Length: 587
Image (tube, rainbow, N blue to C red; front, side, top):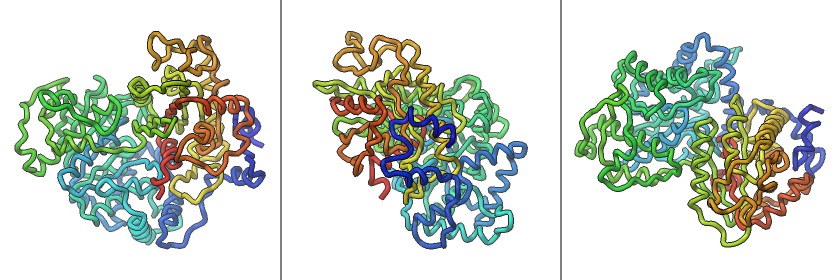
């Protein structure tokens, strides 16, 4: 038995050997990284996804990139080779009128805002993003909707067979998972004849496989921070250099206000490439004298993303000589931080409605279900978790309070890759959660029929060990004096009737109020205690309550007037939670 197994049961409120007996343990022991048996080409969506999963996953791709860092340019050349083998030339991508967006945090939300604005003009939009939350086809959208299972299956097999013709003994004919999906998105958008494509960079920019795009209409850079440091560099300045790699000669680019160092790098990069780079004014400048702008995405940080999206959409429409933009009154240029300021204009009604109607699941998303309120945000960097904490606390302060009975606050967290989970958890500590719950990004322990969320790069032991490490970090943080209760009024005491802190007024090790579960489903079962009207699993394993904290906590959760659950740390975790809480997303 492995180290993680031997040390699991005392910390887990669900033992790996579940009520279903040894057969479940045997299934859990099987290595998740074993590739599935090859499927015969068919027209079933799940068969296509299983075959896609036999390619390298994104995590494996990252390891491959690390080994090839001495010659990153070769990665782009390889991508162009794959594009040619698939039947396209780089010049063909110019037909897509692409908006190319990079950044550390907020680039997906920026893309979502931009796509929704332009769709409001009656344009047929394509949108390529990553990662997916529930189904892989979410990554490729037409007019805001994931392509259908039938369309995904059709294009997958067409591209797969096209590339398979070049197969040799080393299997180099097949691109990695993310590269394959990027190629597939280009094919789908061209064949569906979209008017424009919003393309989100995968990782970095300069050597990301989306950067085979030669002539986008406009580029954008959202907020920068530290992420993927083993690939992109260990300072924000180094990361800015990578992000600025998507700039193209003569193609306008926009960025939000950044710290002085990375902003200078972006400015220098733009000058070297002969790219006209503009600094976005804050959203308040576009509201001045007009109606306040309503955003479909919650959180103060989304205003920066919306400001960038407005500039990208405005520039795209201007480049296409759209009448609606020709009639806009635009302020004259000015210089800030040695960069020209982007135009200040009053957004059109199409722009306003686009911002208002934007939906982007898993980012500052709230689901209210009876006594439970789920706060979902896939923040996974230091800066994005800080923004998540602000949004969560503000939501609690502005939300309705129950008339009687206690409230319980629960954190559901996981973090993967080379991210510093201790630093992320430290940022979450001031929220004063009554319980911290940790689990891997596995919807179920046992293999399921759903291939969309399969991960073949790690073992169950590895992901559980990672969760135990999260719990240890949380316990060490709990040894320090707890911070003031951020959602109670100044006059209320943490030990009052609205609080369920396990040791009010006392420095407390949170190991007594933290639990590790072996999958998302079991974590949600314990948190919800059957009180979520939609998430109603057939039955809860009796072993969910074998740990004393789980047993006592279950009573607390059943009696609470309100339960607030923040799910964060990983978009993949948020996706697994959404799959269970919103079954329609899997349909």
